[in-house]
Image 1 (cartoon, rainbow, N blue to C red):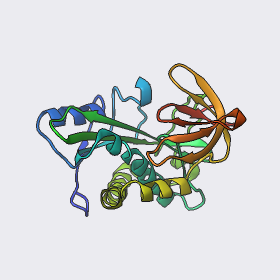
Image 2 (image 1 turned 180 degrees about the vertical axis):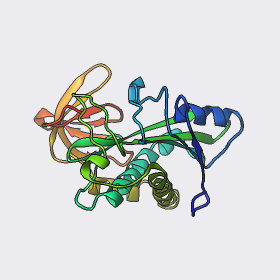
Image 3 (image 1 turned 90 degrees about the vertical axis):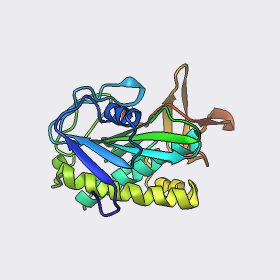
Image 4 (image 1 turned 180 degrees about the horizontal axis):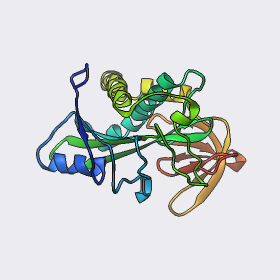
Length: 247
């Protein structure tokens, strides 16, 4: 249990901490609870992508029952990104982790952390939120189109258990800010760490690909994309690619 009173449970092996979280919700768990695994056999990322299982990295999911609309709960992906970036920052004095829309943490343009928020079926006005986070502590996957890096390769010395405790504390901080003050302070803190603001990028949507300039983060967390001719578009879901990196 952390200093903030949030429970933490470590498992030796699980298919996916997100899937285990959903099972816990179905069994009556209401959270807050963070589940971490020393090994995942079927981890996944956004859009069903496989999540590489590498030894001594951090794989974890937080379970939260929230009284809010699903769209509001989704704003906590930005809180999770801030918390994860702060964990990486605590281990690396000479690097400044950046957050990449919608849910990655980068160091020197390379991915060090991914985040996947999901919801479970819940009755009434309650959103059962699963906050899945993976941090490359000791190793990074070799995926050419999505360059990745580990904290250890940059000289950091931090173990998964220590990283998780700090992650939970920082997520609780930002979740409390969100609960008291709404999304605005989260948005401002996220923008202060944002990768690519003012840069050209490609945005791949389900049925089209757009090119433009990432100008801002909208009040609801959407990406503001300025297209050719001065038109703008709000992107609520998609994959963003910046020059010099494919992912």
